[in-house]
Image (cartoon, rainbow, N blue to C red):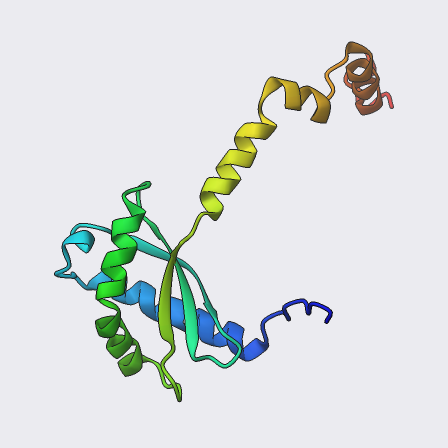
Length: 153
């Protein structure tokens, strides 16, 4: 049996995901949670990916101001999930309120890691060759070594 590639999300999925992201961000901004893992924690909702049937939604969060203990934050969010679903239900007009599944967003960490790799000297010399002949040729092409003024050209 051949494996099927996952389909791109439909327009409705994208709209619902964006609406849920806005609502959850507003809840995290204004609410204070009594859960000990969520006290004094500010979260950013980076993305919400609803399933094709809109019954489940994966919510990607990252703590504001740096990495804290993400495992305890995710456990705290799991404990306050019923409250969050009630809040979302009161603010969004949708037939079914999706089950919220919280995950840590690691895209910022991955981007930082790739940036560090690209700026290593051994990688940088392969990406941006700094040989002297190439630099002289490029300066001549740009007219930087030319003694003519722009009016004389």
